[in-house]
Image 1 (cartoon, one colour):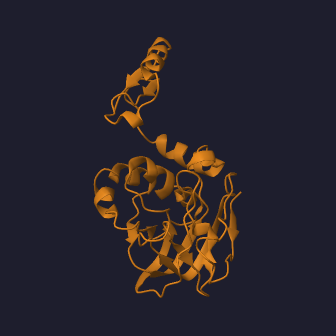
Image 2 (cartoon, rainbow, N blue to C red; image 1 turned 120 degrees about the vertical axis):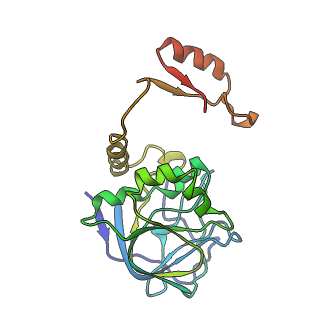
Image 3 (tube, helix red, strand yellow; image 1 turned 180 degrees about the vertical axis):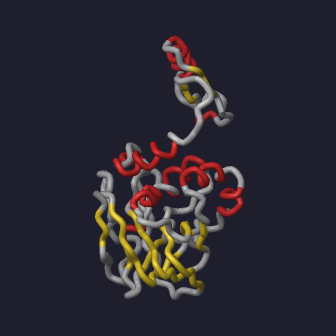
Length: 239
């Protein structure tokens, strides 16, 4: 069951470098907080990926912090006065990243909440990540993923502090390290959308890294692994 959190916050002047992260290695409990008139602050690229949501009173919402690679969490940004306004209801999708793998782990990890709403929101929100050109990648390489998991909703990349009339802030359902297994709600969400794809190809597929050019991206002794997988009836695919 999904629990809606009416209010949550920390002191306005919390130190972004010492503030404890809201999450542990355990997967977060699936819940959705409704923030009315809050402000979404993007990452400026200068302070440990600091970004997130402040409610109307100016309190930071810890649920908006992101789990990053190597066991890190995003820092808390300084409070900022909104210089833009987004009307309607929007769902906080995650934190911007144009890299394919990081996009899956950080940018769509909260979309499971779409299946818990009585009516779809007006759009989705991603706080910008420094100078990364997110719009370019959303329109090209990441477009098929967004179309599959974003239910056709417009994605708004937030580049300046933006007040949102009604923001739906879900807990992450998936992520780096110990969160890779995903919550039950996130797995149901992805399973439902994968089931809509017409499968055309082998039933057993092994995704290999041997086709990558960078030596540090390869898997040790993968030729032997491929041989064993082929013996087990898997088709070897090298992107």
